[in-house]
Length: 452
Image 1 (cartoon, helix red, strand yellow):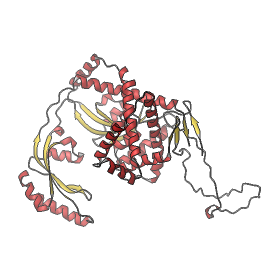
Image 2 (tube, rainbow, N blue to C red):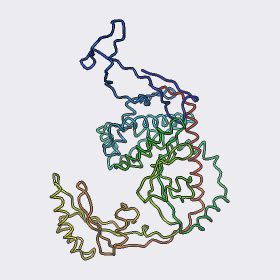
Image 3 (cartoon, helix red, strand yellow):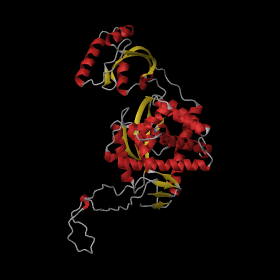
Image 4 (tube, one colour):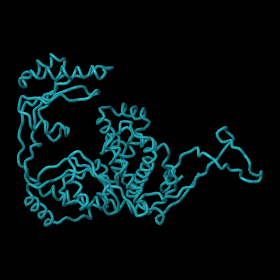
């Protein structure tokens, strides 16, 4: 076992120094037997050797003791399993080693947050924890008991999610107690923001997701590569929100990295430029910012205080059929062709029931759908449809084939300026977020951490 104790002077921003001791022991197995030509009193090391264990000398074995509290290998593996689950189980083996180190870093931060909150007598009681866990389970359409079994089947555990819920909850309360009371926002500041918004009516505004990764000059390249790997995993189908919750060091990690609606000018220059160069649904980065790197995800965009066609409220009917288990690509193509041909006979929403009966399809009504809440590829289609028309068939082998029929549209109205209280709350949140980063950074620097 290699143990290294690191205090404030040796550990910066939660990054483990790139120092590692590797011990290779060769036994008497067939794989380790070598021809011995050296004298008997030498080490008799082979000149032509194979290293049987592939280790990155810059990575520490992912276990630690944080101010006396143990983070076990099991803790790391169970949290890692949640990330694998969020990515549909599709993470390359070479990526898992990097993710383990990131997970360890997150668990250390969570431990520091819980410890600091406990020092101020801030805790989450069991009843509240059960309620929060039940809400998470409901997002998966499962009971807490079913969700616990599901997590266990995926090599994770309810305890891993409960730990994350606890850290997010107590840290938020600690910030409200220790930071928020000292955030001052004057009436003049709020009025100035409202006036600027009115002056900027019609300009672009962006809803942005961010994953912030702190870095030092010593580990900057490593953190940059970590950011690139995160981007690759998200582009391969991973959940941005899941990665943000696990890896972002901003307080917005608790809400999946969501920064809310901002203008380009409100962001650091590099981020403001990047957000204007990507399309909705695209990701950008890693982008160098003071103190580290950011990965940006453009969730949405709109014009300030101006009606956006994508805010229109639609009344829809969905016609869908699923593919029987074992359906091959040729059979699926034939089903899609029949579906498309039948949909051509559509004569407004009144004929949907008849067509559904012909196809043996399921029909679902929804009278309160905003265009912007639909998947990005469908949004321009819906904007171009007239009432009574349907989208082209779409779907997948897993989801089946479906079409949306437009039965009504309530056009978007011009938005008014946000209220005084809404603007004040937004400014306060931004300042609390900045202070929280400094707070957590100081906790890392003061911690006594043993890596094993």
